[in-house]
Length: 97
Image (cartoon, rainbow, N blue to C red; front, side, top):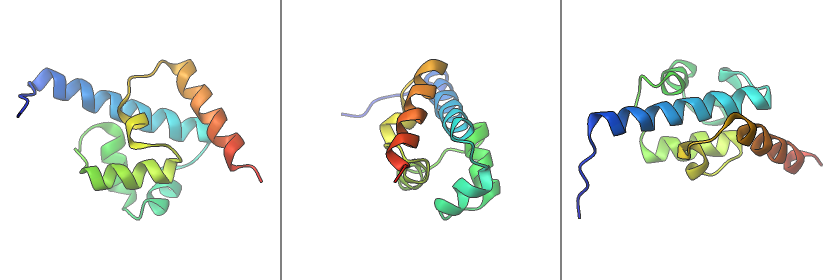
């Protein structure tokens, strides 16, 4: 079954994605360059996705999620700021040796 996504839904999805990428990256204290290097993409492309001006492929989303230490679904789920802070504190705890 094919789903028709209207322009408003697509716009909301891009906004959620860009806000989550920016929020997670900022909370982790990482630069666009650090994340883009981890994801093997250019910083300018990463920046465009983070600003919501580019639509990444699923493969690109997987690379970005991996670079941020999250799952793809966590990049597209609408979050409140306190939820992003909690998610990032969990990521940081998991990364400690």
